[in-house]
Length: 198
Length: 342
Image (cartoon, rainbow over all chains, first blue to last red):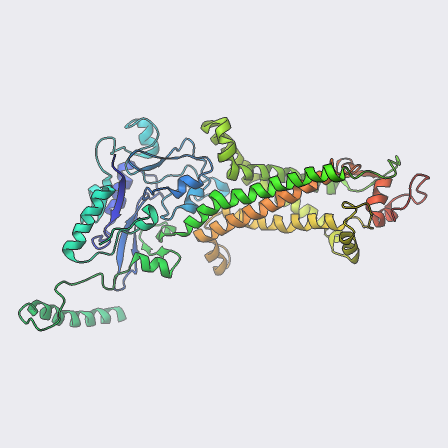
């Protein structure tokens, strides 16, 4: 089985936010929730870089570790998913997540955040694959259809890569070797405790 | 405007450089790098993480909190929540229970030395008792539901199963959030009812020095409240205040507050993490101390519980444990069986 990962090549990302839009559309993500976002660092200054970020599907995921009701699980593909049927909306995963991935439908007055929502790596949830029930809670299950996450698939500059960790790392390494520079795989050290040597 | 000037300046510099660079392969002596390196001054993840606790940028979506790209502090908080906190909690609660059991075995119940006189005096009014029980019941609910967040996954989940545990935890969360208001009201009532009796006096030092009559068999004089009770009072008030502040920070996250500094504090993930740490530690300390309070108010001391149930205590109890207060409230003749405590 592959170990699915995301990699954002910050030297290619042009902050078009198409990944954000594609994700929202594909999964009919509710208003106010962003499973994916683009953050621009040093905006307007020399060396500015944009990074598209969503759930990184961490190795030994912090969200899963801190969840008081143990609603997270990791699939055979290394995708970190959660059960909305079990989630109580306590906010703990949001405290622990290094990437700000967990989102809640409401602000959280009186702790009524609602069920947590996050990037599913287009892999749905614990319900049966490609069913209406699954779609309603988690969005489409492209992985079950044999497709990769839409954000990466339709990235215009191919800055955002999704797929088996070793393969996308290889692609990134080749790119860096060819063009002679690379600002690194953002978040990899934090998420996977490894970085791509270039 | 200055931006425009900068841009113009950059262009003015860049054009000749570009031309020069284009010409470079022809004139081999000039030390111009073969490739342009746009990352030379680009932001580096490692460097940013080293310099700052987190990487933050600009974002175009309305949710400005999402501008934080990476916050590794979550890892420390996870370590805290996953191993440090359960360890502290286990030590605090099991340790206190063990201590109390040991104390009961070694010391036994604190008996009424002269038995019950049959005459009672009022110790707590209805308002005082209402305040006490409002605080007490809400604290027990808050304590149990709070413990569920930390320990439920390890101890309750395997027993009842995932669906039932989620159902319980969901209600526990609602209870925890809403009962907090009752707890705060209780705190306010007991604060105003009892603060006057809980100011430290010289008598308290003697009480502590003589072990309060709990350790050993002396009965140091005490007014309405002895030093031990004063300690419980202040732990409840100050601990309760801390729990209230941190609790409402967690309950109303990312709220704007009247002052800019306060808003800045309240609108960061770091603040939430710190609030949770303080909330949990103070909560556990209070649970441990309240366990001791429950012990001494029920099985630990003969004649004590009625003060909070009916509000009346036996005169002999009053004389034995609160001699100064008893002087004021108990009947002067005392009767044959009563002897002054000191």
